[in-house]
Length: 147
Image (cartoon, rainbow, N blue to C red; front, top):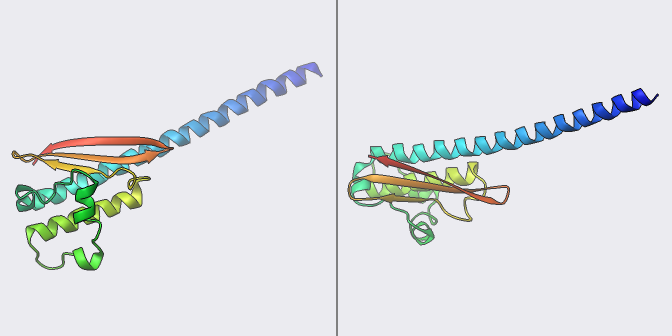
């Protein structure tokens, strides 16, 4: 009888360990998924910027803080900032940024708490920083690309 109780105790400890391992694995997979989404979103705006070289040269993609976002991107809708047919470099940049922020809000948790930024220097070195939340912890990732 004692052997059965000891065997059940060992089995239950093993099963609890397995359950904790599964929970940790789920957490790490969720974090990895979020980082992957951030990477895909960063490379999306970088590719969009490559297409619009005039927008880069004129600084239309530069979003350094919440004020830049509030003044240029927040008022946009699909109807007002949509770029159908042909449009100038500034309109295309505004549309690209609007789509970029929309993708972040859709796929990354907590992006409205601290906005992501883009900085472009004179030699077209682009720094993209994406911010999001993971379990009440602020996360940030930065990509630096020469265009």
